[in-house]
Length: 276
Ligand code: NAP
Image (tube, rainbow, N blue to C red):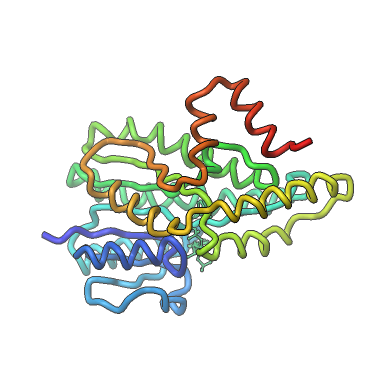
C-alpha cells in the first residue's frame, strides 16, 4: 500500500519542495497550506491533495487530517514544517510578537501532533518529523526569540520521542542551516519590522549585519535538496535516529556545540558573533 505524508506550510520553500519530492517517490501527499490559493509551487498529481490548514486554527488541523484519511485511507508521516523567523533585538519585541512566534513554531506543531496521535496510536505506527533549525541548537543574536522557539521545539520532540517509542511511533528533528532559496529570509526582514529599534544597539546591529551578510554567502547552494532528502530519509530509514543536520554551513558551529566543552564553544562563537 502507498504511504501517505501530511506536510504543513507547503505554499513555498522546504514544504513545497518536500511535497513534490514525496509525490515523485510514489507517496500520497496531503500538502497543507493556510491559503490554498498559494498552491502554484505544488505539482499537479492525483496523489497530491491540497488542504487548507493554518497551524493556529485547530479546526482546520482536524479537518485537514480527516480529509486526508478519507482520501488516502491512512496517514503514515507528519512533517511539522510551517514556521517563520522573528528577527531583531529582544528588547524591542513585544510580548505579542514573541507569543505569535511561539504560536506558529511551537504550539502549532504541538497542536498538529496532538491531533494526529490518536490515529498513529490506533495503528501503533507513525512518524512525526519536526523542522527545527541550526537555531534549535545555537542561540543566534538578533534571532534570540526564533532560537528560543526552535530550542523549545527540540526539547519537546526529544522528550516526546520516549513517550511514543513504546507505541511504535517515532519523533524526529531536522536541523537545516541557511537556505536563502526559500521565502524564509526575506520574510524574516518583514517580521523584523514588528520589532522596535533601540538606538543603543546600533553599533552591535551594524557589526552583526556584516556577520550575517557574510554567512549568507556560505549557505549550501543545494540546501533545499539536502533538507528534502533528509526529511525523506527520516521518513524511510526505519531507525529511531532523533536528529538530522543535512547542510554543511552549520557543521562547524554544531560540532563546537556538541563535541567540545562549553568554554571552547563559547570562545568559538564569540569570535563569530562578538568580533573585536
Ligand atoms: P518559507 O518559504 O517562508 O515557508 C514557510 C511556510 O510556513 C510557508 O508555507 C508559510 O505559509 C508557512 N506558515 C507560516 N505560518 C503558518 C501558519 N500559521 N499556518 C500554516 N503555515 C504557516 O520558509 P522555509 O525556509 O521553507 O521554512 C520552513 C521551515 O524551515 C520553518 O519551520 C523554518 O523555521 C525552517 N528553517 C528554515 C531555514 C532557512 O534558512 N530557510 C533554516 C532553518 C530552518 P504562508 O505562505 O501562508 O505564509
